[in-house]
Amino acid sequence: MRLLTIGAFARATGLSAKALRIYDDCGLLPPAAVDPHSGYRYYAPEQRDRARLIAGLRRAGMPLAEIRTVCGLPPAAAAEALDAWWRRVSADTAARGRAVALLVDRLSERGTTMSETTFRYAARCETGTVRDSNEDTAYASATLLAVADGVGGPAGSTASAEAVDALRPLEQADTPQADLLAALADAVTRADRAVRGHATDADQPATTLTALVRRGTRLALVHVGDSRAYLLRGGELSRLTQDHTYVQTLVDQGRLTPAEAGAHPQRALLARALGAGAEVEADLALRTALPGDRYLLCSDGLSAVVDPGALHAALAEADDPEAAVERLVELAYAAGAPDNIACVVADLAA
Image (spheres, one colour):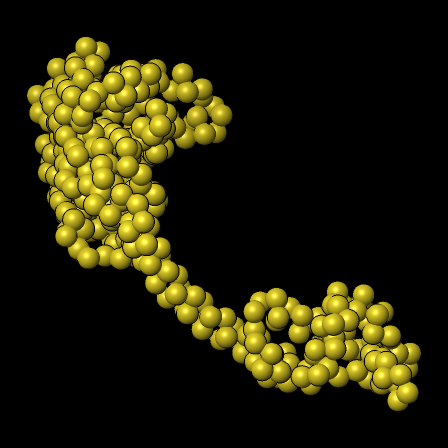
């Protein structure tokens, strides 16, 4: 049998000579032979698989003591042991991650003016010029901003109100930031069930929902449908949501340009909504909040008729949320207000 020098074996396995010496010293990978005069180590070619397994387990972070146990097992049993170890590590990592997230947030708040942050807000919900009823809902508080646009007949107003009401318990709940998105997802599921509970043979109400829940320096965003959320930060206006509409899918597929989508006769046809289709699929995201941020949540009764430049100017020029909301509603009516208008503007203030 032709043995490999430690250097040749290191090159063949991708390990360093130093690592091979450590594995020898702890009994994990003793060489096949040792020169009695020089102490030089030699390895058999068939030891390469064991060396690569040890190296892989070390890269995964497994302690040497547990590697020794895994290496002593048949392949199937070793795979089961490795899977069980990883489940333990994953659970421990998740628990530590939640603890670290809470500590980071507390330390961040103590070290900055974010310790006493709050929303300063204003909300309006107005009926469009050609509408007989208003199915929109707009809501704002120190910890929750929400807009919903109900559809599907007279029960649409109930649908939008219940969607927002399903989030209200999160205002007072002492939910850790690390669990906030999960709590928000549960609330959306409850909202979807509540809306579906109003379906009849004649009516199947549905509603959009776009909302922000604040916990210290974190904002949890939920979005279903074509209501929108915008952020004005440092003078720049950015859109935080993507419309869930049939026309937007055509834009995403490259079959329509954004300009063509704005004039499409089916631009209001929803691809996702609470109470419609199969199980609800909501977009969820966690964002970092900064003092000076200004947020706008609105139904398509505003965003569909007021262009982004005018939205930007109205938000940037207003001294406070009340003035911003007033100006936005004025712009919607100046554009004809063919749909109901729901909007919330909130400043994050320290």
